Image 1 (cartoon, rainbow, N blue to C red):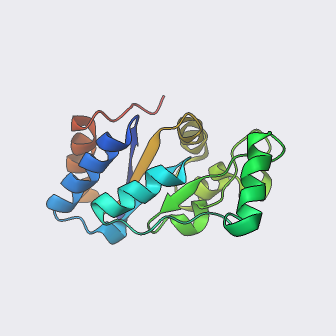
Image 2: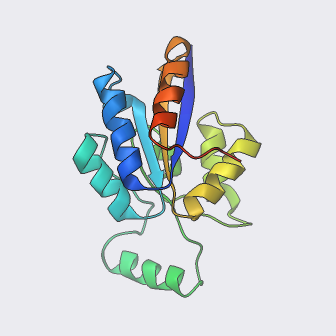
Length: 158
């Protein structure tokens, strides 16, 4: 049975080192997802660790992307998440905030199997600029990966 092990990292370097250790321990990058608020963070992690390229929501590139970025900066639109890996389909472009509707990051996290209460806490961490690393693993690997995350300064969920 596949389970999700989630690590919250306050700095992209800690997340990068954790992902490298996941890879060194035999976990394939196709089982690792990354979620952050800034595209540059996810892009750098993708380049440095081999996880999939970042994905953003619709309308995040070109002229529309520029206009969207300005509107987010002026608080006219909610900020959105950038994601890489298998969870990116559900999380890329997910909105932050109290009323994100169907496209919210909490809904996306619930959609990949994270309980609602935890999903709400993870959203707050991403909104603060933290990096979320999600590994889809067999249950037997979960304890080892949790310890690996802790060794790289993983932040407790609450």
